[in-house]
Image (tube, rainbow, N blue to C red; front, top):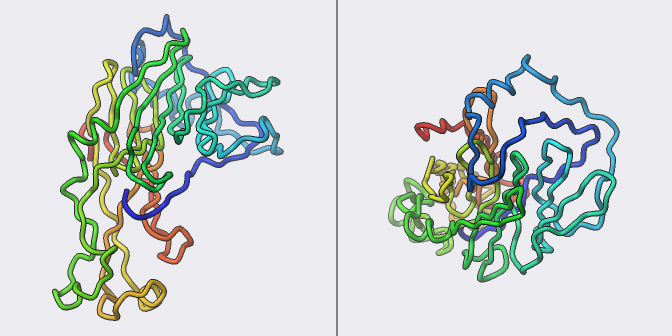
Length: 305
């Protein structure tokens, strides 16, 4: 992701949170995936009308306090809460009725992409050159199994080798040369940079999916730790109005033209139909001045469509 700072979408306070129970697994020996169930079986189990009714919001209840940037979290089948503290750079576990327990010590890195499945917890850590807005110097997906053993996958190494959005151009799409010459350098055309920021993850049998905000892609990590690209999220076109042009100092000739923003995927979840649902927080101002540019994409996990 280039030139913009983004924030998480996982700030939530809700009482009476219901979590569907999942079958217990055998010893945790399966890397970044588990045997014993399929994505289709899980999706069918969560289909509306089969199993628990959707939760109803109750009175808010505080379960943990004094956290530093709790921007990503998950709740396992036993009601244990795992929280990634982005500003403290650590992962804590909150067992109902007990104080938070640190299970991934602070290392000065950004913690995100927390998810749980069958007794394991996955998260990411990222270190950047210039705070959280610089390109990554480290980007790892980590997993703590039921036995306490932590394994790690180097997402930045995959990004450097594959750069899934490396051929995608983010820019104005149809300016004539004279107008393009007047556009500020920071808005000149560029292609996807080498960057990785795993912001959301989803653990399923045999596979972990990752919404990588830096790569602008949905990734897949198999049981052996091999990383591959499921889908590259499309650029987000924004039509420049006179108000937008005036606010950020663009020449009048760009009014009415579209600028393609980076999509910046932030989370991934499994739908009841077996497809993956990916949220985005596109690059650019986050004050609403560009209009409603965030989206949720439906992605076929088998074809990437």
